[in-house]
Image 1: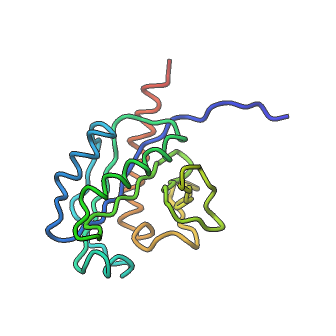
Image 2 (image 1 turned 90 degrees about the vertical axis):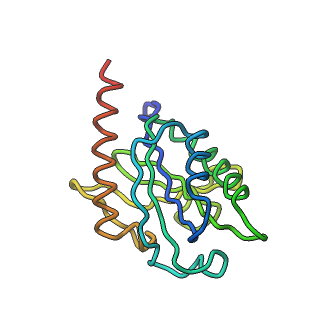
Length: 178
C-alpha cells in the first residue's frame, strides 16, 4: 500500500493571448486581484504558432506570460480556470473574446495547463475543467510532448519556464525548510 501525502504547492502561471487594442492592463489588474502579486511578467510576445484564435480575436495577436508570487495547492487550478473564464467574459466585445487566459502551474516535475477542452491526455478535474500535461521536466530541461502547443515548445519559452521553475524551487526551499 502506498503512503498518501499532500504534494508540494506550485507556482501559478497564466498565458494571456490578446488582440491589439484589448484592455490588457485592466485584465492583468483583475488577474492580480484574484491571484495576488505578480512575481514575473514577460513583455508582449508575438502569438504566431497557430491561427486558431484569429477568427474570434483577429490577427496580430500577442501573448504575455505571468507567474504569481503566492504558491497554491495544485487542486486549486480548477478554480483558477473558472475565475479566468469569468475575467475573459468581462473583456469580451460584441460576443467574442479580445483576451484568452490560460492558467496553469509550474511544479518541479511538470507544467500543467487548465483547459475546458477534454482529450485523451487530459484528466477531468470537475466543474468543466481538465488538466493538460504540457511539459515535463527531465534531466534539467523541459521536454515537450506530442500535444504541446507550438508556442510552449519554442526554445525561448522553455528557457523562460526554466527560469520560473528555478525561482519557484528557491521559494519552495525558503518557505518549506522549517
